[in-house]
Length: 319
Image 1 (spheres, helix red, strand yellow):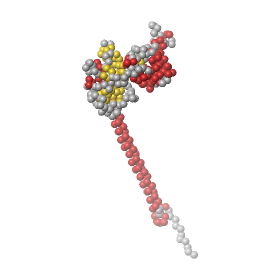
Image 2: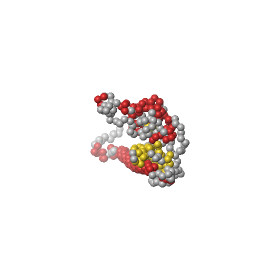
Image 3: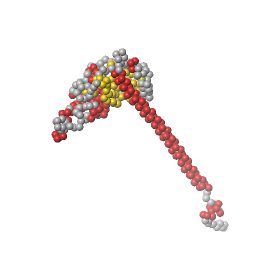
Image 4: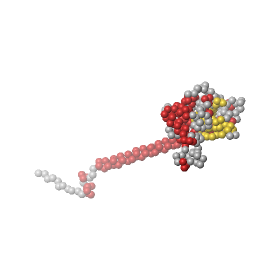
């Protein structure tokens, strides 16, 4: 009977004496593969992060460039609109019978902006201080399409402009002469105060600004000076389409400059101007930021109806 070899035990630090007990190479290879895989993942993540940061920098630079360009275009359009308003004022004050200046004017500014300048007679608008409640109700009914809401707004406008409706509740706070002393002048001093009327939403406020005034003094607008939109709202007869207006001799008008730049920026500037009042040839009473008319298309630089130069105002043609 054969004898089995004696079993020999080796300590871990003597494993090199017997190859049978040496660690297998494949375990070392597996450990190296794990470290290599982790390094590869780390490199991929690093490259992805660098790519993401580079993309963010490029997009941010393009956005800043676009914003800067947009701000520059808006600034240029604002300056062009104010210049067009001042140009219309000067042309009106210095006009002669031979020039025959008619509005609206369509021309190009020196910077290449296309501009349309129109005049809106204040006598053809609804005066917030003097209009009858019936006219106010008809206007706001047309704008809100809600007769009950228009009635409430009309009542609040009448209350706002009526000194008797602003009497303080406490008689001790009344002025010695018996007039209301509520810290506010009775009536509207600017159409921007329409925003203080309860029930007038921001959208209704912006829409109504084109139809109201505080410079007319009439109980109802003059039919011949009213805009087509106001004529339609109040049920008045329409003027012939495309009728041009001459330069005003006196009274108050709103001069409106609608500017379009080459890159598509559009800006509207309005000025309330009184001519031949208080011994002055003209007086700019108020500057306003206007809204583009939804039905008016942006003027093109190659529009044949545009005059070559706004400063050659005498040669501009009426649209």
